[in-house]
Image (cartoon, rainbow, N blue to C red):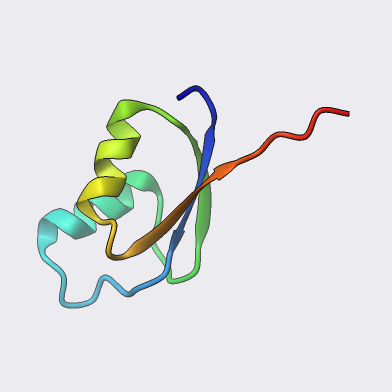
Length: 65
C-alpha cells in the first residue's frame, strides 16, 4: 500500500451531508473534476470509502525509466 492514489471528484457535493463535505475538503477536493494525488495510507483509503459514490480513485503506476 505504499503507492500514490489519484482521486477525482466526479459528483457534486451539493445536498450531501456535512460529514461527506468535510471528508472531501480534508482530501483536498473542492471543485468538480478536480484531481489530487495522495499517498496510499489506511486513513486515506477510509476517507475514500466514506465518499466512494462521489469520487473516482485509481492507483498511479510509476514508470521506471
